[in-house]
Image (tube, rainbow, N blue to C red; front, side, top):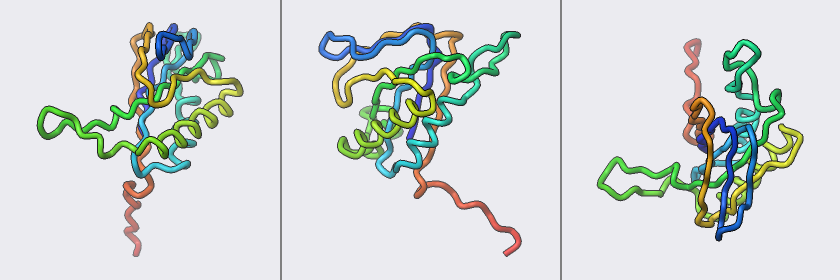
Length: 160
């Protein structure tokens, strides 16, 4: 699972010319689901987004989390984060999860993030064409990825 996390002063998302989610200061999270992802990746990434210290503290250093600031979160599904354009000029999306699975894990991520923040999370419309507006703060943009369990390397055991 991959998240493009942007610290924002404000952000909103529209589908069919209707605003479906809007926030003030906080995080805009563009979320992509890998075909091999499971609930563990969704839960881990939600915790990471909520606790990542990318907001300024009293001295101006990035040392404060979204939870600590009381900021808001807007999550937008974006399968194109798994686009592979290494060959040719048209991206391949074979690594992105199929819509049914992606929706389930997107919703799991939303629920987990909402639980971490102890408040509702604004969102886009899964699978819809959307327009996203934001005022990036900093700018601060961080790419987070939790590889599916099947793709993680097992640690070496030198004593065996």
